[in-house]
Each structure stands twice: as C-alpha cells, then as structure tokens.
Image (cartoon, rainbow, N blue to C red; front, side, top):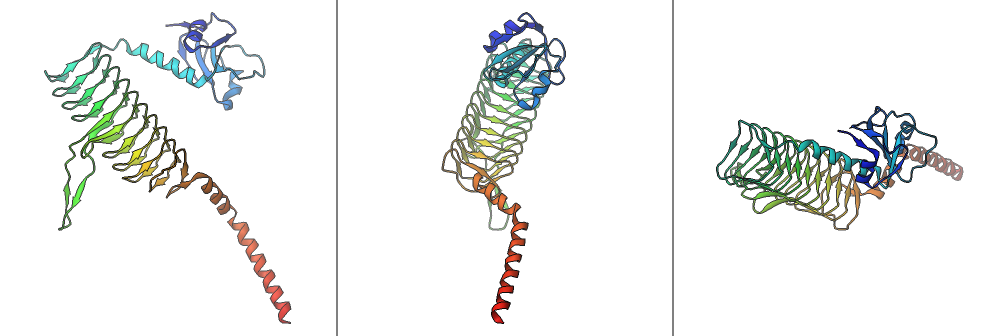
Length: 349
C-alpha cells in the first residue's frame, strides 16, 4: 500500500518541502533507504546521510537547517522521532487488522468470555472464567490461567504465560516468553535449617498502555497485588518480585532486578542491570544509572544516582575525576615528601 507525502504530513501534522505527490510504500534506515521508502532524521550524528540517502521521503525536525540541497522530499515536524514512531504504530495496526479469528488447535474453556474481533493463535490455552476484550490478539503458544482478565486491544505475543487471577489492561503489549504471575520468592527459615514455602495467593495487575519486553518475569504478590501502573515501559529480561509497585510512565531497562515490596514512583528511569533491594521507596522522577545498586529509599524526587551502593550522580562524577587523577596526586605527594626531607636536612645542620 502506498501513501503520498500529503497523506503522511496530515497524519503527523507536518509541513512538506519538495514534491508533495511523491509516494512511499515501506520504511528504511536513512543510510540504507531506497527509492520509494520513507525514513527520518532525529540524531545529528546521521545528518550527513540526509544529503546522500536514496529515500523518497524524509521526516526531519522543523529546526533543522539544511547545509546543502537534497533530492528527497522532506516533512518538517516538531519531533521527528515521535512522528516516525506514530507512523510505525499506524503501519503496525494496519498490518494486524487482518488477524481475526481462532486458529486450531486451541483449548478454550466453555466458561471463557471472548470479545469481538479477537485473534487467538494455535496452541493457546484459555482457562476457566477467562475474559478477553475486544480487539485483543493472543499469539500461538500462550497460556491464560483461570480467571485471567485481559481488556481491549492488547497484544500477547507467542509463548507468554499469564497465570491465574492476573489482570491485564487495555492497549498493553507483552512480548514473547514473558511470565506474568509466577510465584513470588517467599520462604520462611525453620529451626532445623530448612526453608518452608510461603504460599503466594495474590496476583499481578497490569494497567493500561504498558509494554513489557521478552522473557521478563513479574511475580504475583504474597497477599494483594504486584502492580504495574499505566504507561510503564519494561524491557527484556527483567525480574520484578512480589508486591512490587511500578509507577506511571516509569521506564526500566533490561536485566534489572527489583526485590519484593519495593514501591517505585512515576516517571522514574532505571538503567540496565540495576539492582534494587526490597521494602524501599523510589521517589518520582528518580534516574538510576546502569549497573547501580540501590540499597535504601530515595525520598527526594528527581534525584540522579549511580554506583553500588548508589549515591548522588554529581558527587559520583567528582569522585571519578579524583580517582583518575590519583597517579598525578601520588607523584605530587612524593615530591612534597622529598622537599620536606630536604628542609629537615638543612634544619638539622
């Protein structure tokens, strides 16, 4: 399917410079795009490719000043990256519109309630009293345990396991291999040295507009709910423990581990491979650098942290600067020691 520059500009509220009738039918990276493709420029590091790209149409920031003429038609928008993301989303929705119906073989319990325009792929298991909302797509090999509720227009990719009693909101995306509602890690030490399992009878609640990457694990609560608030974006290979709460629009990068009962505020950014201990609170707007270890509550909003144990980002940079200068400082100390020895020798004479 082809779209003209005029049609695309209307979708993203952009202004056209060049041939408004040029048509594109696919996407390409700016350094590799071919004629008939659409691309974008948001990162200044790639600006040189703007003048050599074979793409027919390029989305750019409205603030960009051209250094020389280009062959492609451009559409100027306030934020090229966000505009391109909008187009990709529209394209993805268009592609998935044809996915409706129930493939075979599947198992769907007779008590399950299935909405309209739903897709259920082959080898999906749908348990007792499951509710699947309108427009939701469940891809092959997924498992929905008893009493699971999934709202409208949610996408469950292949091999996702959503265990009993868990709830997923609308416009949620859960990528392949993720497990929602596995048992929390709760064991009570006994006097004889053994560990007694604490039953995990809570659930997981995922609110609207959440995206969860591949092969993540979100444990059910011991009592109550593990909660992922609306708008949160979680990367691949995460471990989120029982009774954790992640706030609105918080972003967590890959391989992060969040221990039990920790409450993370809204608009928090957590870098990859960070570790967060249990039973603490992270204030709104906190930024945690990759591979940091957070061992105590962060009470002040909009704080930036790094290191293990994590501490103030600015102080950490100063410390790093001092560490880099240690060899020079060592030499200066040796020079001062030699000077002191020379002075002492003169005084003793």
